[in-house]
Image (cartoon, rainbow, N blue to C red; front, side, top):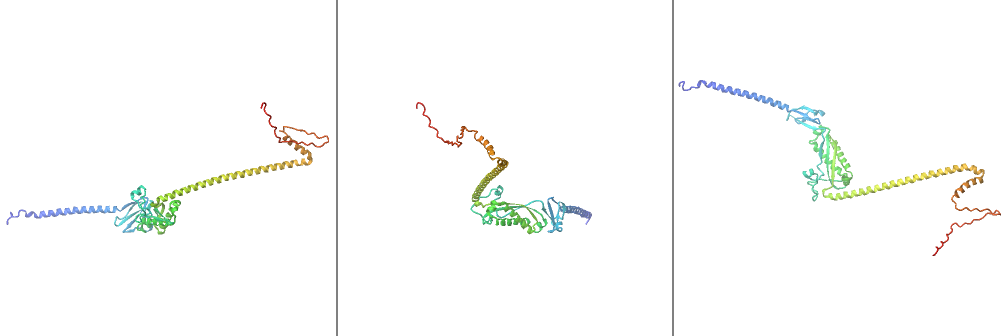
Length: 358
């Protein structure tokens, strides 16, 4: 074999070395890129642990499902915080000042979302469907529909989060309990008409007592309750309501008339009493004046009774004879005896004379 049989044999080792070098350079570059990407991913991983707690909330960090810290220290206030990213840590945000709302799930009739949004009750139908319609039973064994809406805020976030699997569901169950118990202690007329505010306050107090006894960590702010008669009996209840309003109107009018009559009678009585006091005062004044006059004139009478009588008689006779039309003087008899005067006061008038020529 001569050298012409293998023309490239001396260059084969050089080609293999070049390929190995190229592969080595490629691996080195790839490893550098991988390290860079891993560094970026690690930075992004730890950077994702930053979170913000809002001004109206608290936060709790759970590490493998357990809170980090003890007591009140587990609560994180507003601002920036850091924790290990998921799945090591998880963050629970708790609205503290924000009002929470929950609605009862029992006692109300079934209605579609469109009917509820429009505020129009469904048709009465043939009767209550226990599978869909809810109701409550009153103290006098009547049935009404009742729905409660409760507003509360979280006072103890630790108890609210860790003592119950779902605290909001617990509040809802307490609200349903309070609604049913309150209805059982109120008569239907009180629940629907005469004491709606008392019914509502009773539901709110009951929820507050249950939440406090369970250590739920909430404070009840307010409670709104709507009570309506059964849909199937709405017309009958409406008639009863109209009759009750008429009765109340009649009672109100009667009381108004009674008050007016009593006021008038009182005014008349006060006027009569005032007149009596005035007459009494005037009468006593006249009596005291006459008594003073008598006291002043008594010495003159005792001194000369005849002269005193003449002094009293002359002015009196002057007043009496002022308007006298006829004056008759009777001189005494010669023998000094008294004369008698006989007058016919009520004389009949003479008949009129007939007219001339009649």
